[in-house]
Image (cartoon, one colour):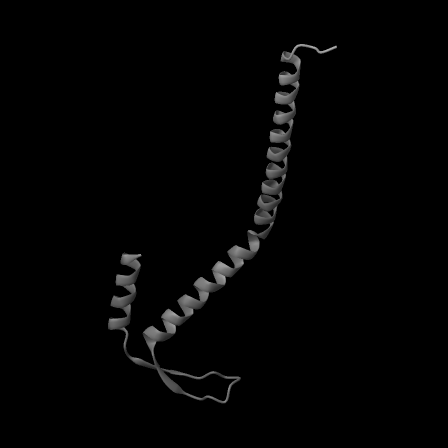
Length: 99
């Protein structure tokens, strides 16, 4: 991350020239913006967009993981219950039969 930060700072320092930007559908016409601001803003928006797409595409895997975690929890609960019943049966088989 430090290397990327240094590259971004070097880019910003060397590209401080103003660029005329015209946002066609909006009434804002020809306002000067530093070139580095445009490039860094577009990179940031692209990064956020990629993160959102990645998060959404991993939704199925997260859903399966939650389902498997619930299933594993239920099976562990059943296992401990059955272990307790086995212990009870072993305990009762060791006691002498009372008639």
